[in-house]
Amino acid sequence: MPDVPMQKQTITLLISCPDQPGIVAAVSQFIFEHHGNIVQSDQYSTNRQASTFFMRISISEDGFPLSQSEIAEQFRPIAERFHMQWVLYYSRQRKRAGIFVSRLDHCLTDLLWRWKSGELAMEIPFIISNHPDAEPLARMYDIPFYHFPSQRETRQADQTRILEFIQGKVDFLVLARYMQILEPFFVAEYPEQIINIHHSFLPAFIGANPYQQAFERGVKLIGATAHYVTDSLDEGPIIAQDVIHCDHRDSVEDLVRKGRDVERRVLAEAVRLHTEDRVLVYENKTIVF
Image (cartoon, rainbow, N blue to C red):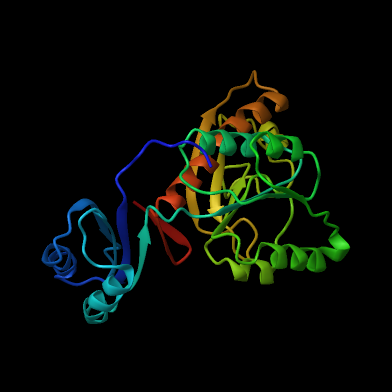
């Protein structure tokens, strides 16, 4: 467990519902009536004919008299009135992130450094890999490492074993350059809870050797995309993206080096947004507060 600076604990409410007048007023009034102090609030409407309203509101846990079960009970009439889908998060209840990696460890190294420095407020119960290469790195950070070999012919059975092993140990998963395709039954166990980093600016250069593709195309920007995993390969809701400039002097090796830099940043940002409960999925997109 890394040393982190003391921060005020918050209760965060994420809401989505059909848009109509009075939602913000009703939520704010509920908090006011229970002597809550709002520390952050944001909202967004899709502005369509049948628009959807999204809201993220955080209150200070200090001095708020209701327990989690009491909030659920007393907020229910408001939720039913506005047909809300809503979820409650406590910042003191850190999410548990299981990290998956293959041979390339640049994203894993960056995540571990940010976690150790307190930048990523989460727990890491384990690191899983289909290769043994990352075990020394995991040992350096005192995180349990597990080697689960995987073969294309036995992928379903291999992933069944992994799923049985991680059951109840994590809240979400991070694929830090884990070069395996997850089976639909595996993805179904963690809907919108598996974050992947794709080493290109999706939807460009899907598939193998994206940097070679980018080099042959002579692009002036390359990027990376972090998204939630779905059954459709590399087509899940995008959480974060970024790009880096390149030019005619860059070789394929230069593009790979630059690309890995942006991969690290984008994956870390997506993990931070997820751990801070700032992402709401809408259709195949995300609302990021």
